[in-house]
Image (cartoon, rainbow, N blue to C red; front, side, top):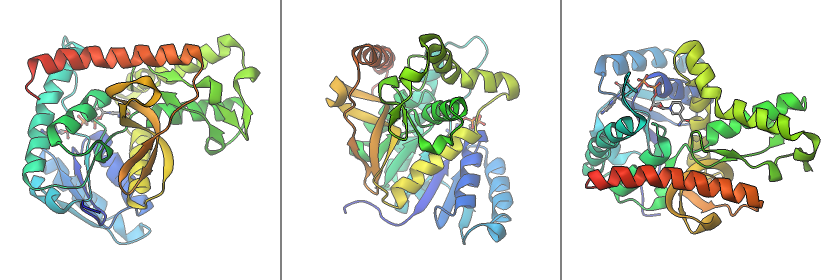
Length: 314
Ligand code: NAD
């Protein structure tokens, strides 16, 4: 393989999401070496000390240290959870422009070190920023992954698990599309033990569940200001799938190049994940209404991409 092997992970952005992800990596013993980078050096250094005291009770050894972008030069995986929060009065598009500019600086600095591994992006709007990371880095599309709808799909499976009194791990179902308001549940293939669940639910109930999944982030943010444990578990799951070459299917943010009828967009879509990153995007057997909703979600992202890339040189 002509890219960096091993399992050194560099985490850029140790806020609520980043530090929860680091904690998940530690508790599941997913990597041997973890480097924390943040603009707020003191916070990152504090996290390093705190996490280091957890190694004693972790499944195995893990070298955790504070670092800089220079540490990316021999990293297998760089995970980006850094970003500016939305300020009062700021539009969504303003925030997108601001975060794309931050990514030009972060990803540009990382590539200057000679980084030749895999990027995993969680910062919102994640689909746009995964696309930006791919464009800025010049890395093959397989090695730039967004968290996509990994969290939304977890919320969907959790809701179905409760509905049918079954462990969510035994529920198969995906949310696809934008990690945002235009996402959609793929009811046509949602199943438990091979039995489709859609015929067991009324249209009203399905709509209620889809809205609850879509709006879960707003509910959590209203309750405690931010969401971080769910996405941290999802990021740890993607990390494990990559570093352990699992060939498992996860709904990550992947670049479409004709799959499912769309191109030139990063979007949440079930994909086979292994040590090379995105091995393959799955072609879904969607019904007509799902195809229409996916097309609308793609268009939503492309409208933002169009607005951003008109004013940026990326
Ligand atoms: P946070 O404000 O707690 O943390 C952001 C961190 O980024 C801070 O520590 C800040 O110092 C750091 N940072 C900012 N600019 C930086 C730079 N240029 N270089 C290095 N570090 C920098 O925010 P959070 O709650 O941890 O959320 C982080 C991101 O994750 C947000 O964009 C949020 O919307 C997103 N998020 C994504 C999902 C998902 O499903 N993908 C879910 C929840 C949150």
